[in-house]
Amino acid sequence: MSTLPLLKVNDVSKFYGSRIGCRNVSFELYPGEVLAIVGESGSGKTTLLSCLSTRLMPTSGIVEYHMRDGQYRDLARMGEAERRFLMRTDWGFVHQNPAEGLRMTVSAGANVGERLMAVGDRHYGNIRATASDWLERVEIGVDRIDDQPRAFSGGMRQRLQIARNLVTSPRLVFMDEPTGGLDVSVQARLLDLVRGLVHDLGLAAIIVTHDLAVARLLSHRMMVMKDGAVIEQGLTDRVLDDPREPYTQLLVSSILQV
Amino acid sequence: MATPLVVSEVAKSFTMHLRDGVRRPVVANVSFSVKAGECVVLGGPSGVGKSSILKMLYGNYGVDEGQILMDHDGKLVNLATAEPRTVLEVRRTTLGYVSQFLRVVPRVSALDIVAEPLQARGTPLEEARAHAAELLSKLNLPRELWSLPPATFSGGEQQRVNIARGFITDHKILLLDEPTASLDAKNRAVVVEMIAEKKAKGTALIGIFHDEEVRDAVADRILDVSLFSPRKAAA
Image (tube, rainbow over all chains, first blue to last red):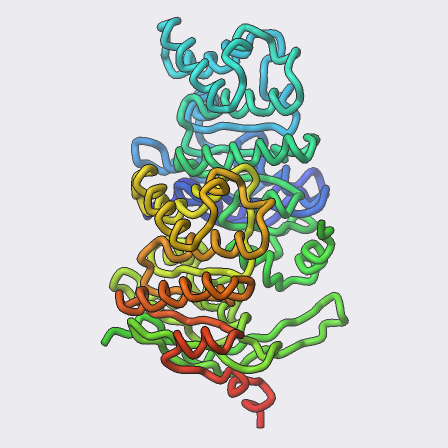
C-alpha cells in the first residue's frame, strides 16, 4: 500500500449565491481506496463530487492531486487543456445516466476506443482488440461491438460506460449513483462487476450513492452528508454497524429488511 | 510467549438519538490480553456484551474509551483510534473474523468467497482456490455446492463457508463469533480440531461459544464478561 494520498481535499466549500452547496469538507484518499459519499437528495453529495472532479470550481478550499510524475498539483490552478487531459486519461467519471457519459450515436467499440486515442493510441487493430477485450470484461457480447449504445438496454449502457472509463487504466474513478435507475437484478450484476474491477485494478474510487447497501458492498470508507456538511465519517462497517450521529442513525434504521 | 492482543480499560455505550438520546452503557473497564497459541472464550449470559466486545476488536463498533493494542507486522497498532485504512490493513494481514452469519455477495461462488482473503494477500488465484477446496472438503461441504453462490445454502452450509473463509489465512489473531452454532456434531468436531491446529500454530483466538462441549474442548480460559458490566464498574 502506497503511503502518499492520491487526492488531498482541504476545506472545500461551494456556495450558489447565498445557498450552501457543500461546506468545509476535508479528507484524503489513498490509492486503492473506495470512498462512499452518502446522504439524501440535496445534501451536497453531487456538488462535492463535482468540485472534486473539477466539473465545478469550489468557492474556497483546495483539491490537490498526486500526478503520475510524483508532484501534487492544485486542480484549480491547472490549465484547461491539462485538466481535460487528466479527465480523459488518469480519471474516470461514471454518470448515473449513461447517455451523459457515452456518445450515443457512435458504435460501442468507438466509445471505448475514443479514450485510447486520447492517450495516443493510433493503431486501429490494437484499439479494436482492446475494445473487444473490455466489452468482454463488462460482459457485453463482442458481436455488439459495432452497435450503437442507443440499441442497448440500461444495464448494458451502464456497463459500456464503465468500460469506456476504465480502458485507459485510470487511477481514480468518480461515480455518481452508478446503479440508480437500474433493476435490482441488473444492479447486482453491475455491483459485482465494479467490485471485481476495483479490486483487480487497484483503483481508487469516490462513489456517490443514497443506497447504503451499495456503499456496504463497494466501499472501504464512508462519509455521511447533511445540509452540505460531512456529519460523520469512518470505516464503512463502523458507520453502518455503530452510527453515532442522529441523522446517520435515522438513515441506517430506515433501511427495509428483506 | 508473545502477546499479540492487549485490551486495556475499554468502555462502550450506545446513544440512541432516535429514542430521545437515551444512553445505554454496554461494557466498561474491559481489560484482558491473549497470548499466542491461546484460546480465550468470552462467557456470560446473553446481552452482557460479548458480541459487542468482538465487534470492537474488529473495528465494527467504535470505542468510547481505552485501547485495543495489536501486534501488526511487528508494530503496535491501537485499533481503537486507528485510521480506517490502518484497520483494513490490519484485517488483511493480522486480524481474522468468523462472524455468525455470512454476508453473501451476489454472483460470487462459495469457493471464491473462501479463497478471497488469501488472494487479497497476494496468493495466486489457483493456489488460493486449491487451499479453499481443501478446507471446504475438510468441513464436508458437498462438492457440487462449491461453484454456487451461497445465497441459497442452508444455515449450516453458509456457516461452514464462513468458517473456511476465516481459517484460510494465517492471521495471528482470530475472532470467532459462535462458529459452531448451526453445525451438526460431526462438523462441530471438525471445527474443534481446526481450532486446535490454529492454537498449535500460535494463533491467538478469542471466541464466543454457547455450546458447552465445544467450549470445554477449545478454551484455555473463560473470561466472564459480566465482570465488565458498567453497573458493576460504577459501584
